[in-house]
Image 1 (cartoon, helix red, strand yellow):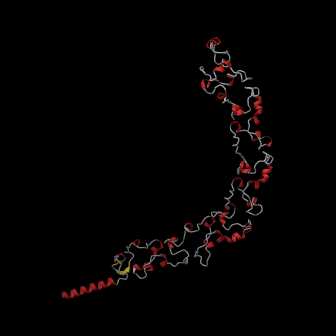
Image 2 (spheres, rainbow, N blue to C red; image 1 turned 60 degrees about the vertical axis):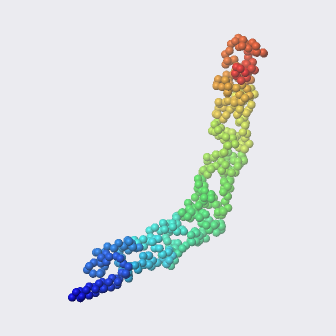
Image 3 (cartoon, rainbow, N blue to C red; image 1 turned 180 degrees about the vertical axis):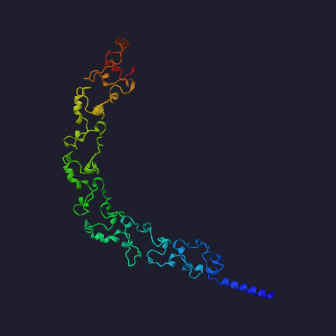
Length: 415
């Protein structure tokens, strides 16, 4: 009896062993059967299914989560299951975009919502009007989902536009087939604001909407960038000042910017700086009779009347030089005036003991009609008797200003 029991047990063990060896899932499966099957039978039971498919090379997300297992696991040997998209899905693009479906598609849907972003990673980013263009307008083939590699130069798609354009005639004008020279790739139209005119910026007064206003001949290659070539009539007609009569330079940008109406105009007056009193003077006040080329830079050429009419001191009577800058700056009204050479050529009044001790020239030069005459004793209130007493031993001494100056040339008591 005991021997019979042992034989039955061995038979059961052999049967169980053979059953494991013949598992439809293959010999390498290490997942517990109860993760998919119940004790009521070997059929797959979703109520007890607890296998984490995210641990495999193909997580079940999106549309994959709705599939029946047998749609992918045809042989039930799970190790034989494919995980690349192309293994299960037919390539409707016919190898024109590669085999990695995940570059454009997600498991949620075959629809592509980020075409612009995808194109940024390609050789031809979608900018301007290309953002709104239908794919089949560029990717033309017998299959609407076949995306053959296209040329990335504008002329590859727009040669017919280039050939058919008559305003301007691109062929006759000899335009380059590099469309980006004139057209911006991020524009939404071929003309107007879409023109790339950076080689001659269309701004301010040049922001002209109609090309033919400048390109009158229809030849878009024969215009010069020189202002005078277009604005000769403006130059000849200008009367305030008379440009032609004054022989102004035809280099317009010397004075003008691109402001509409040519105003305001400015001139680099560094050859004769317009400072202080000269800064607010109208051009015609100096450039009389439209003389803008031969006017002298000498002060007296404009201010000789001021020189002749000056009475305090009388410049003409005193024989002052007409080199006004010796005493004057461009301060309005000619004042304050200072004769800085007084210290080096005559008596020191800006340095030494007399510095700051006088208010005006008339303090010493008491005769307005004669600046060669001067007085020391009007300021130095000496008693003549005392002064004479101090100078008894001085040869040729006299109580006069010129006598003081003959000995005291630096204004101090010891010289």
